[in-house]
Amino acid sequence: MKLQCQMTIELSLDQLAEAFANLDDDSQAQFFCRVAAIALTWKGFSKDMQWYYVGKHLRECECSTDDGREMLREIVRVMDDKTKGTP
Image (cartoon, rainbow, N blue to C red; front, side, top):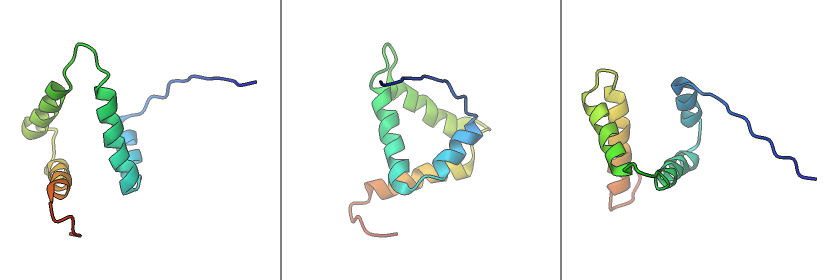
């Protein structure tokens, strides 16, 4: 006999951020891949526009931080580094 159970767990942004920060690099990378895969399922909403709005928010909103922007810049810098060496 197989039992199925569903439950909803509400996480604050701080709890979600802490969980992400405590993952290893492989799991953090897989998190981004899974977010991208979920975004592909959105109906009637453009993932590209969502990423635009997130970027605009990070660039312009007073709730954004230099540390948050720099974290993303560093991820992109290393991801785009063609030498694939260590820092």
